Figure 1 (cartoon, rainbow, N blue to C red):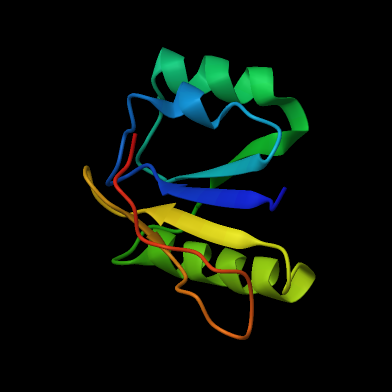
Figure 2: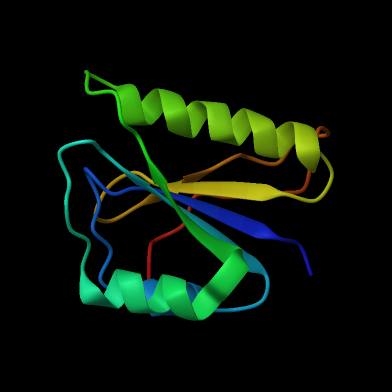
Length: 115
């Protein structure tokens, strides 16, 4: 099964159903801004249960779009590391995910409603 990378901008999206991502084919990266000192219990307990398949990425530099630049960099790293297998996704709002569209450069991915 294809590895699905979910990159969460926690400054703008605090998902309530993250436990649905606790499956072997998901890798979750939660990007936390410098002004955030807490994450919800659901997020923390799910990521802890996922072990090495999940991680927090603390962005220390404040600034407009600082988290977005870190997420874009991470997407590029994933695309380089697993160009034929990875299907990166980013929760960009309360209702939608972003993921790369089908192309000859990689596996088919799609925009979908968030669980």
